[in-house]
Image (cartoon, rainbow, N blue to C red):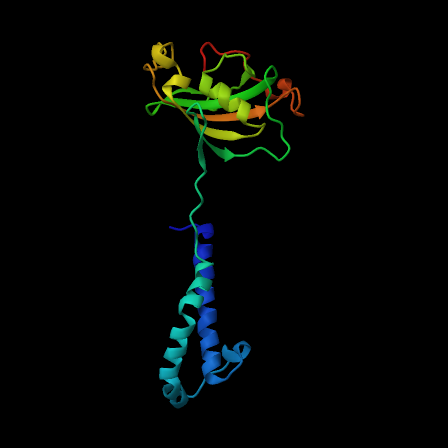
Length: 219
């Protein structure tokens, strides 16, 4: 069944159509629209004007009226714009930080979290573990695709990344470790990457956020 939110556009569309029909009745009978709801014409007079009524309704529901109704119809959400950097990193912005939020610079600390997968298999999920990663920007501790993305993002951003093999674990791939699967050579990686905070410039403090200082592998 449809939720109330899903029903509202349909209700608005029906209301708009009803208004058009009411307007048609008013134009044909000469009764002001405000009074049409309480006005009931004699049966004989309604029969006499029925052809004109149908004609007027057809006119009202022509292209201009259809456009008016279309404005009430539900519209699909716009997909996030996908961009590709010169290196081949593909990304889309699914959530933007507040206007004025800073962009990381090399050398400062950034608090990150992510979900990472390869070939549809998740190999790291900081959201699920309710964990965070403190990253020294530009340190090279993360795969090159994530390092590049961090420098393009701003605090509060959430991006979807598609990282080609050359910007991931490269030709060597990654060996399996306890709780983490192996990554084939030159495999494409997918990330949901979020910059939670830039502690040196944000109001947030690391002590408030919590988390671990390091992970055992390059995320």
